[in-house]
Image (cartoon, rainbow, N blue to C red; front, side, top):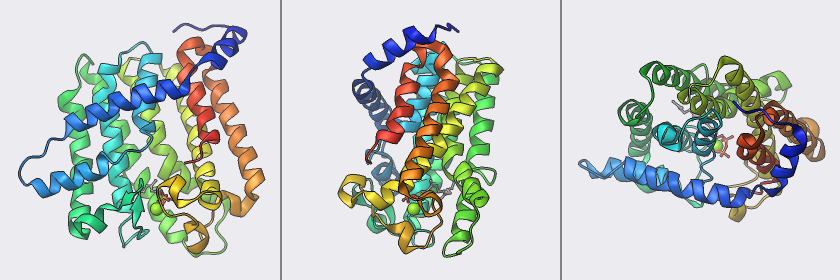
Length: 308
Ligand code: FPP
Ligand code: MG
């Protein structure tokens, strides 16, 4: 991998057009997601799966996966099935998170939630369908990647979504709701699992597909853990400072549910400062890769700058 000096890098970084980069990548990901899931019999379940999968969103996880695959010398085509699978898993986790048994939310990505349109039973099944299909999609559609790398990606992703990842984070989150003395350690556990685990899998899987070295994977893992935590801190802040129109989902929920959040420990200003420090830490992990890391650097900055 090419490593360049920091001076050259910072000059290039200021010229990198993240907006154009994200728009171009989002377009490719949207098209691939649309192709990935045609409607067949029984139509209702495919419609429910597509309703949430194609409801927009930043497509951050797929874009991170494509970016690290390219950073490590691979191509977008090699990573696209995994990129789509990451969005399928993220979407299913949100469908289930919004169910009455969990957060009971009515809006997601600016639209009525899946169960509000299709009913609870179909929403549960749409989530299950997306989860299973994500793994099938990687295994069946990935081309030009050696089988041992694919196995590693599937194993890493399985770990990220199960009880050692998203499911574990969500269960602790639900248990802590309304509990006054949640410790910072528990809050960190929740977010390392509920949010950062899938972001980490997104970053690392792209690199594995491209055959990155263990050292590179370790650096990228640290990058992803830092942006994962920063992302969650910003999410907590936006729940307080943003509007439903800006976020596309209900706001002020954390306070209403008496949830422990980073702003509840640190206040808003300190939370923003901590998020910024994590972003700087993330950027320092990948700064040695020169121009190839421009997207990852800019995405890290975008996490603290975002308003939705
Ligand atoms: C949103 O958090 C929810 C998540 C990040 C993940 C939730 C995980 C599950 C429901 C487990 C899913 C099952 C598998 C197998 C992956 P939030 O409620 O804090 O944020 P929100 O305001 O966007 O709802
Ligand atoms: Mg929720």
